[in-house]
Length: 591
Image 1 (cartoon, rainbow, N blue to C red):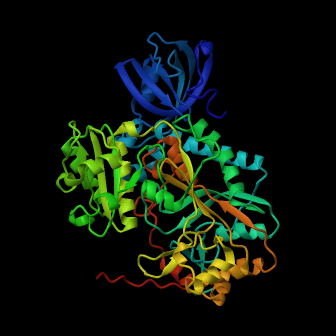
Image 2: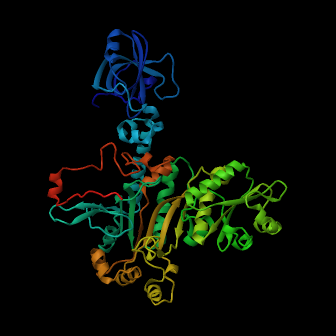
Image 3: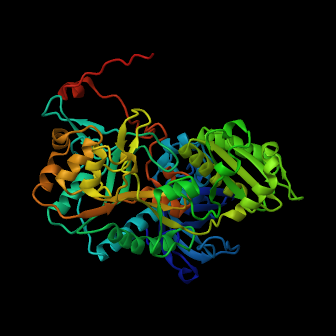
């Protein structure tokens, strides 16, 4: 190889006496005397120590800043003082020649390379090329490469064809904001970057392809959060013709567990079949449609039991409880827990406990005390048991209790087994929901899903015979350790059913034809039943690496404000470029 015969992680005692050449970054220099220094050289693979023992070689490194790239040619010898912490710790190189390949012209680095994860995130993202030199940061990207390769190989073994779909496409209402691209040759018109290859993969099924997949880039103009990167992300997109929900499940239950077991922080992953939990049951038992099944706590409905105890927030509301045995938290910890639940959920949390004497105490105990015997018996409460409580409309009470459940697991480690990957399927999602902002009926998940009951249930809903909110769909989410990896569905491949489904959200036949012309027309030529799913690659790798945020597993991530501070994007462009695109920028008025 150019500039080297060996990598910085390759040399061993067997190489003693050989003349070799290594190249890499000068990680550290420790000068002992005028003619003696120890230099650590690092490349992608590891580190090797170089020993400077004469004045000529000292001159070669004397004026170099750390992180300069150098090439060292010399003889391998055994080290007097060995370092068992690194693979090359038994040897060192005595240089005959040192060549500077790329000089670092900065006396001070933005952060210490091997401690870059401790630096401010903005600095890390601005100098991401330095951050990635840290072996701890780099290993996440290496894992990502290996996981993607393993996913690709597994899908091909299952008979799927990798087919790339367009990046420039038409804007369509798929739940998030589009990134728009102006069309220079068509003034006033825009392409959109795909939020997902949804329509294209369904069109492939109508084209006669049987099994499709790709590691697909997706683009959504949405806010960041810990498990979602703004701007772009990647997913293992797949679709199968003549397939049911169970066919999709079978593929992923075969593909994912071995990859998680091999590359993950934990060696144990759920075996097939994964647990299947209906959406309504998940909300009732866990307070979440992405439950962490490693936690052994479940929600209990205590509306009938204590809803009428006289405590104001319970009156007329649903009351949910999370019962935690053998809890030794202090009052200060409990108060913090309740405060944190309120911050995350926007709703208050309450509590009481059964003390060492077996009596109800603390929190709202005075309201529950009159029914002490009944409450203790009904909930099976024992001494040193904590009961967390939430109240409100059903969904609000459930979600708040779900937040409390997760926080209680953090407070009480005995109630969570962190050393594994626990998968489950959430199934039977509602087809429709009431929009929080619009107050009108909207699609709950994917608008292209097949409703349970097909055409008949949609017509019954339009006739007022069925509550639209009671209609479920062949929609499913794959969840692992409380993280939603993917949503999928059996698709609505019948044009007539598609039109009726969109009528429910106030879009008529002409709207469907206008918004989804290719899909609608393709379905009129005879489409096979088909189903698919698209697990997020970034989220998978985040789980496997045990990373706290998704940005740790993306080579060049944006910050929380969807800015690339390294490249300076987004940025202003020249007026000439705007003129070519027939675009005029107007000032934004701040209210």
